[in-house]
Length: 176
Image (cartoon, rainbow, N blue to C red; front, side, top):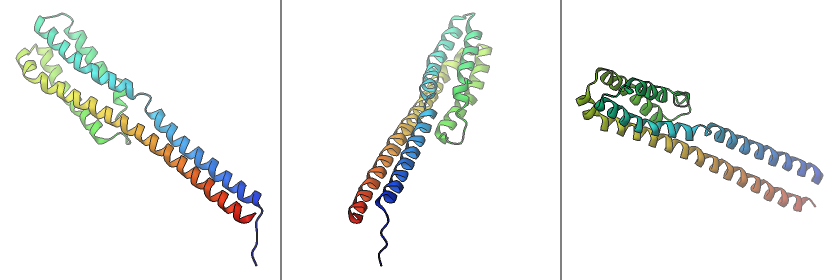
């Protein structure tokens, strides 16, 4: 004996799963986008470190009285909240490692700048700027991966909803 369920029960269950899948995929996509809000700011600040490091060299070479103020500005940018907040579990190790290298090398550079060591600065600035560039690149790749994740989640949610609708309509046709 075949027990037929009402079509309305099948529809209600299908609609429930469609709404659930929609809420899940939208929620995950929105959480990922919310975590991306500060990415542009982080990339801009990290990129500004390059210009600031050259400005420090100019100040050092010209004997500018602004050197100490510019060192403090560099340190503030390097330790800005948007960059220090990168030390969380979901940020890739490449980003955290590059940031740690910048911080470690800044300690040495800051020490040499405070002593007025122009030859050391000239010998090491290219390496430090390369580290800044690699850090900016790592931040960009991280931001791009998050955007790709949003696209993938949205596509998976859309495909899941389409599949649910397809099988629900097919099942309803058999029931009617």
